[in-house]
Image 1: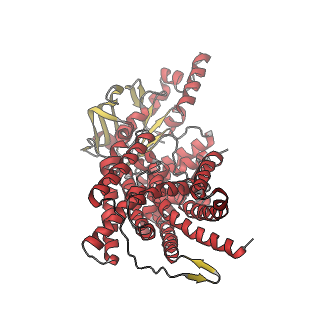
Image 2: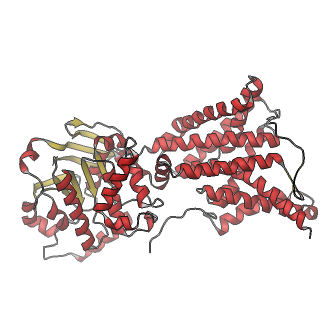
Image 3: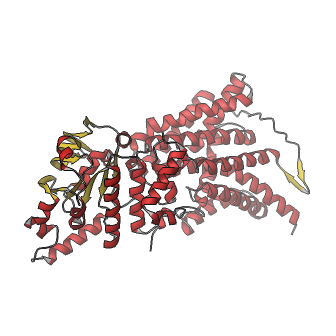
Amino acid sequence: MNSTTETDSVSDPILTLNSIEVLYDSVLLAIKGVSLEVPRGGMVALLGANGAGKSTTLKAISGLLKAERGKVSRGEIKFDGQVIGDSLPQDRVAMGICHVIEGRRVFEHLTPDENLEAAAPISMSRQQIKSEKERMYDYFPRLAERKSAEAGYLSGGEQQMLAIGRALMTQPRLLMLDEPSLGLAPFLVAEIFDIIQKINREQGLSVLLVEQNAVAALKIVSQGYLIENGRVVMHDTAEALKANSDIQEFYLGGGEAKNFHDIKHYRRRKRWLS
Amino acid sequence: MDWIFLAELSVNGALTGLLYSLFAIGLVLVYKSSSVPNLAQGALTMLGAYVVLAFSIQLGVPLWLAIPVAIVIMFFVGLGIEKVALRRLAGRPIVMILMMTLGLDIFIRGSTLAVWGGTSRPMELGVSYDPFFAGPLLLSRINMVGAAVSVALFVAFIFFFRSRLGIRLRAISDDYMASWSVGISVERGVGLSWALASVVAVITGVIWGEIQSVDQSLSLLLLKGLTVAVLGGLDSILGAVLAGILLGIVENVGSAYLDPIVGGGSRDLLVAIVLILTVMVRPHGLFGRHDIERV
């Protein structure tokens, strides 16, 4: 069920993070040394609670940190053997890194068709754009049905599909997904994860998946990293993580003792953040 | 009631209104990309007119050549403004960007005054001032020319925003972060919108320069242009065109009937009332985009 072949994963990762630190506004240390690897053609999950630094890690890789006045202050990010440095987001997209940001963020006043077209690289020919759009509609038939409605009026699941399709239009070799399951019904999460897995298998697309929904994520990835307070605290295969008792208690909801106060607190926090 | 007189007032009002729309289209272009009403658009319009005159009168270049040259120059002026003044403000509070456009307005007005002085210069576009009758209606030729240019520009932008580049610009106006995430250069897009607004400013400057000749007062068009843009919804080009027509008619018809009663000056009052009522009753204008809330 795992899509990676472990042999080439060890030898030549497509993405390597070497103890990176991220600083916001030159003072706030959001990430304190994260190292991780995504094998070529592999699927890796980055798990952790709200505010642990998962999204920040993705933004460091995609370069979107800059828009939030953050920067990588230490460590290095290597993509396909090349150090990324502090290149612009659009250069990284051109290299083959695409980041599906949290909360879907489709272009609300554009139609799904225009959303896909907006993301196509400038160098892509009209013909190619057309066939790429057809490919996205094959992956996500629901989008084809609504391709000329304003994207803001699509359902949450459809918007997430559109956000992923839009990212695929950039022809990435590494797709980073930030909480694609957020706010979606379980059957939609399953549908979307199935498609991601299918693309990973058919196209050899490498995937870095950030999730709070560890149950769903660990079903499709081959390995996972657990991040807490800006640090990687655990790294193992998906099977081993699923079997780990701490993970079961805190992230898979298997534990017995539930502190109701914590849950309420968590939900309140989430409302503020969303 | 004299219907022919009313029709004449309405048609002339609509034509004048389309000239306000011409100005408002420039405001809409910048608003779409930067979410800020560009308070320097009036000064840019005046600068555009002065650049045309610098070539046509001072250098003796024929007008048909001076206008395209000025358009090219102002295109790069627009790009430059974004690069020098606005790029570093990206992500800062909107009020900072608004203050920057105010600063630009004062700067451009000050420097045009220093370079070209305060005397009024004619544009000499060569449009005849002979009366023109459409049936029983007396119309102004220059207003008709300007209105036609305004409509042509409107149509051109409708097509532009459906092109690949235009779709990207609309994406930028929807969501900066999402645009960056798929490799769209937001900076270049915002720069392009300033460049296009500056091109519109040249065209507006030529038409209005012909109507009221070129001097510092050309920059005061901002007030009416802003009213039209707000009434139209600030981010809608169609809104700017229709709001212009509407404001032109209200202003022309209203003042014709009110002026004899109040003894003149009701024209600007009507514009102010429209602006205030729009903000009070319909803050996002007639065609303004509001954030989509799914239910």
